[in-house]
Image (cartoon, rainbow, N blue to C red; front, top):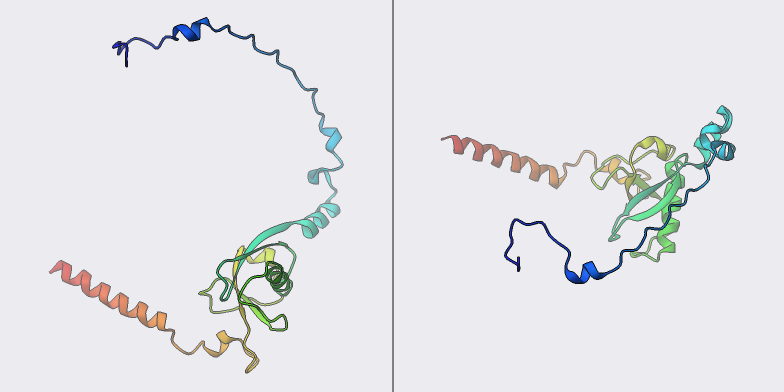
Length: 180
């Protein structure tokens, strides 16, 4: 401190003391809002049949879909009651709307996966709201045999799997040599 008084409480300067203090504005109170005014618009006040329709038809979620080859995920809003096939169409439309690259062929068939590392694609009849995830990976479906890429390659060991196995062996050797 400049004044050298380390233990004294802070005092306002002369300039601050000379300023006039303003009276605080009187507090205004808003009229009380009654809940009956909102009874007809509140989802909690809907009848059971209307509530089910409300839940089924209008609940929407934001999903992120990483498209194979694209630098970032496509974010789109879908109904929870949409199935995977409808979701793929919405994502492809959003992809074209945003002008992303690489360009996709609208006539191509696509499949949706839980993640980039997921082997099995989602069934086209599955409902998005029941899947439990909001992030997906979309890739082009292979038309050569009519089967998906994942079905054709399920018996071929992945290079990542081999690397993982080798890394585990090396880790085991390192742990055992540390004990010696």
